[in-house]
Length: 106
Image 1 (tube, rainbow, N blue to C red):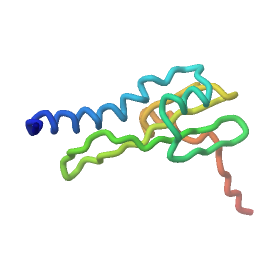
Image 2 (cartoon, rainbow, N blue to C red):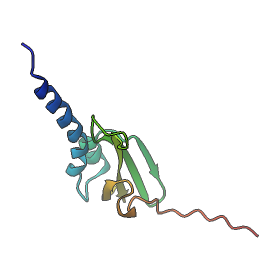
Image 3 (cartoon, rainbow, N blue to C red):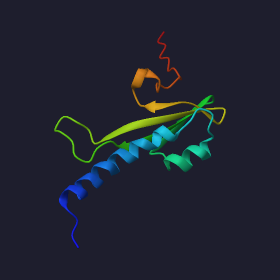
């Protein structure tokens, strides 16, 4: 028995939405272990003495226009081992690394 093409296309489109939907299950106050249970292993991590960033590269669409990206980066920021911020990288400048590099020349 063959599936109609419309069903296959719909399943593919929904699969793309499901990957970014995972970020909606993250909540303020979650532990790193809870985030990884919901989101999976991050694409990358960075940390300093105050915060840790878990960065995820999530698929937003399988079919895109020429000027669109099929993946976007999302972050989860942990402070004292608990989520205190999360979202798409670049939204409201909230994922900016709080460390500051000073280049002082004499």
